[in-house]
Length: 71
Image (cartoon, rainbow, N blue to C red):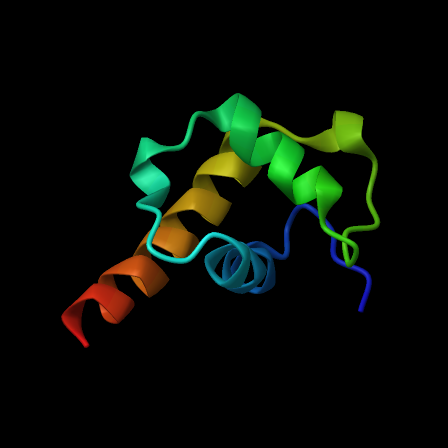
């Protein structure tokens, strides 16, 4: 599975698995960007990131975080 910047939901699921219990709203975009690039499944140009992509990933991850916290 080759993930691109626009695959926010899939990236968010991997980040939630890799960083359980971490509130994604506490993560700086610089760290978030690096964590995405470091994913084995990620196969896109690192320079192609932008605030819009990172925000979409963060919000998708936050939804998963909220669901996990309610369980």
